[in-house]
Length: 128
Image 1: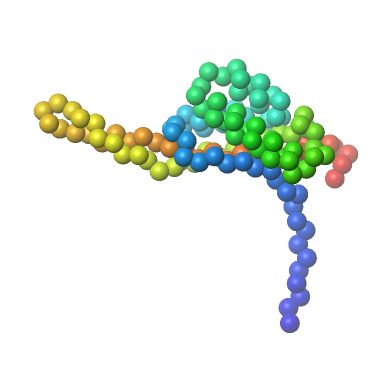
Image 2: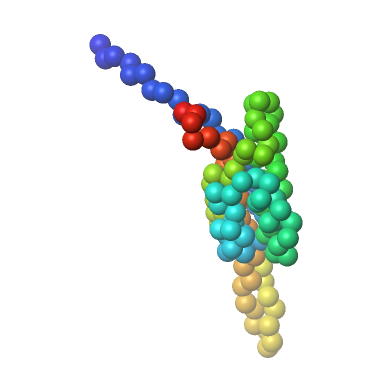
């Protein structure tokens, strides 16, 4: 009979995900690259200053992830949270017909994306 190994569970990560957003993933990645590993208050201030359309969607997902974290653990401090990881994946493409001259047609692809944000707590140097 085999022994069951005791695996230490990693501290839970708090996350939020939104799917099927009607924006190209490359436009959202441009903004997401700026926000990785930043503290939550700084990331929020950065998103409010950016004029990009992807910044609005990222702001909503990050706020949702932080509220999920605060709901699961009420001892967390909002100012000690940071964005651990942001993933922007490509979703399915909506294919539409684009009518051209002389009875021709081209295919127009409208891209969708999925955004996943992982929030974690900043650990102090003395704590383990």
